[in-house]
Length: 270
Image 1: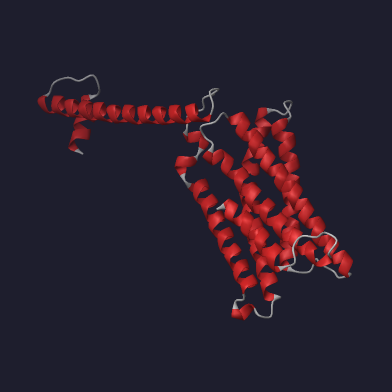
Image 2 (image 1 turned 45 degrees about the horizontal axis):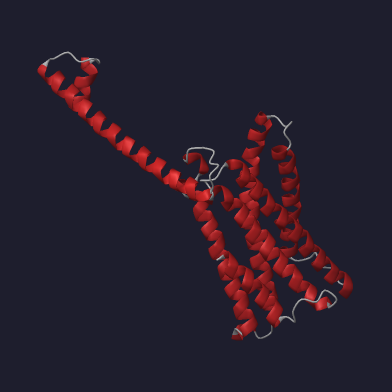
């Protein structure tokens, strides 16, 4: 889905809006749109999914990949803002008046603060673990909020571009492609939300072990470990049920048991 969004965003702006020529003032909007979609949606989304999908890998390389995705997002977001500011500078018109621009600049500014603070908190060894733990409680929910804010801002931008086309009510080809891109952005954000909410994708639910043999071995070992854990849980449940049955029979026959007989009788009565 991410690849489809990547290709569609470039095709939409490149094919219907005169391509990508930085010297052409009108094309600066194309750079802005593509950079923000790829950066603040795709790279941001993939950075979030690192910890939900790559649970079989050691945590350090996943954290590095998480940081690389965020660095790409930061660079593209700055480039996207630079392009749109340059566009309005060339046409000598104010640009910071729409809701799209207000929320967009706020999201990028807050994201930049979060990104810099995260680099200092998680990649400097001298930072105490207690501070990292406290900062993580802010870092994670704020990151999720910023991601969905970015998606919403992109949808506002697509709608704004489509409404500038007088033929929008007829759903001409450029606006149809814009609508399709918006639908894919919603679907992608929904996919990210599903993996965030799903308990089975949480890294904390999977045993933390350091695999040096690579991804395939890690995947096999994780599956084996999960099967063994499941079998052990079933055996423990069977043993527990058998013990309860023996306690109930002992209580009914008046035979002493290794636990309190009164509580056993009470349990059997229930």
